[in-house]
Image 1 (cartoon, rainbow, N blue to C red):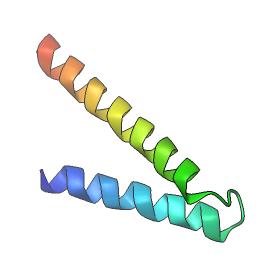
Image 2 (cartoon, rainbow, N blue to C red; image 1 turned 135 degrees about the horizontal axis):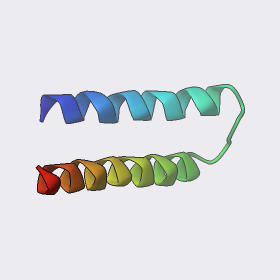
Image 3 (cartoon, one colour; image 1 turned 90 degrees about the horizontal axis):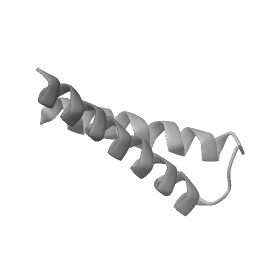
Length: 52
């Protein structure tokens, strides 16, 4: 669980950096993108676990 928290924090920080760099101006867009990425990571972990 701690590893997941670390990953989420890193994703959030990367999103905030994108805003700072002017790559996006809409924080909701950043959050949506991060949520999708995190969900995809969780799906891959689940699939890998099921294959083991």
